[in-house]
Structures are given as structure tokens and as C-alpha cells.
Length: 333
Ligand SMILES: [Zn+2]
Image (cartoon, rainbow, N blue to C red; front, side, top):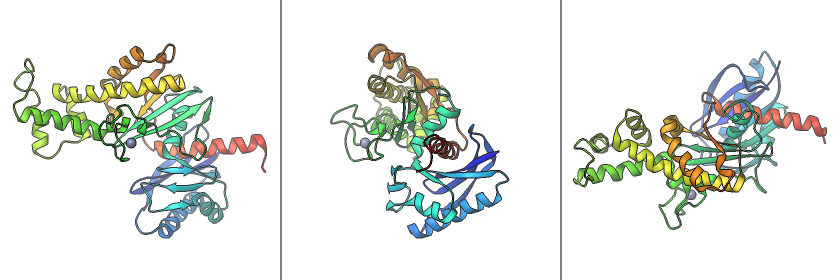
């Protein structure tokens, strides 16, 4: 059996694992290297981790896939900039390849995630797939006509910064009205804060019942209101938390309809922390998609991502596998 080393370069740590061509993990993925210090320290630590993984592998290692958040020029193997790393224009793929002596592919973590869903997850076997990752922010990835779509310089797929409300809420990117400002964990928290604030001032709509919003208000006063805590409350059946999720879900639906009209995908996969809300999050969004997207694009399936544990590691490994196959197809230069 042959494997790729899949490496997920996260916000605070690096996770590695051995990934088979079918997306299976050989042994456990493990975490290594704390991302502190300058880029030279980080690169040295990363190379050390990869070298250990290769040395300890009982399978033949064919190559290495690196997945990293940020703007990545995959063709040149360069991290242009990353929220996770204090680097700019770092030729990471070349540095790792020269140190280890195996082919290295570097890609954006969102690209790795959508590729993993197409190869081994919810979108297995499909050729036209859009993925949204709803966490603190909103990430995106595109598989068009069976291939990852990266754009001219690696900047494609920033689906979270599609404007859904001109002049709307301020986004983490500094612009206004992005999908991320309406359909992220941060947006869910903001929506819940607004409801809790209204409840605290006695501004509850008639017919909502005396308990309405009390749970959110309690969390708010304990300073524990977050996308995660609001989601958990909604899953327990709390009506006000459910309304906050509903509002976020409707904005998600606006995003889905736009994406469906642009790409006419077979499936839109929703991953990230908010996707734990399942149909509570997806159902209202699906309804907006069906009602507002053009025919037949509105028929796109909307599914929750399947790869959970070590999705970043598996995705990075599968991107390396795809590169390996495409080099085999066209022959080495
Ligand atoms: Zn934005």
C-alpha cells in the first residue's frame, strides 16, 4: 500500500497523518509543532514533523500534501499570506520538498476540504460541487467539472466574501455586507446578542411567552454568548436561540441561491462548526434556495459535510494523490 503524508496547518498547531488513495487514514492523525516563533522556526518544526512521519510509516510514502488557511498560490507552492502564519510569499512547498526529497503539494485548506468531500465524503462521485465552511468565518471551495478551481492566482473560492447586503454589517475582511457577516458563528452570536438585548429591555414581541429569550439573556449576562453556545441552546429546543439560527439560515439561503445561479452545482456541501446544527440550519436555507434560485439550479442538493475527524489531514493527502495521478497522466516534465 502507498500513502501520502497529509498535513493540516491550523491556527495553533499542525496535524499530520498517512492518507491512502481512498481517503483512509493509516494509523492515527497526530498533532505536532506549536505555531509560535518566526517563520524559520515554524518551517524547521514542520519539516521535522514530516520527516518523522515519513520515517515511521510502514507504508511507502509517495508524497506530501500541505493544507493551509489563507491565500495560497498552489501552482508555485507559495503561501502568499495566511491568518495562521506570520509569513508572506513563503515558498513552503519548495522548502519542504528540498528537505524531504519527495513531491510536495500546497493548497488552501478550503480547497482540500471540498476535494476530500468529493473524493471520500458527502459529494462522492460528483463533478460540480461547492463547499461552504461555516465557522468563526466562512470559507469556500469549488470543484468544477471534476477539478479544483483555484483561479488565476489562487484567490478563487472566497465565497464568504460574496456581498449579500450592500452597505450591510461589517465583515472581518473590513468590507460590508459579506455572507460571512451574516452566516457565520460570529453572525449567530451577534444575532443572539440582539435578541438577548431586546429581551433584557422588555421588548419581547407579543405572543412569545414569558420565558422567551431568557436562556439567551442568561448566557449574555454570564458573558457566555457565542455561536457555539447559541447553537447548543437551539438544539435543545430553545425558541429564541432557534430564531437566531433561523435568521442565520435565511442568509445562508441567500448565499446558496447566488452560488447555485453562478455554478449550477449538483451539490452544495456545508461544513464547519455551524454544520453541527444539521437540518435546523439547512432546512430554512434550502427553502430559500428552492424558492429564489433560477430553474434548474435551485434543484442543487444541500448536504452536511461527512468528513469530520482529521478532515484537513485527509483533504491535504487527497490533494497530493490527485497531483500524483495528474503527473502520472501527463508524464513528468
Ligand atoms: Zn468579507
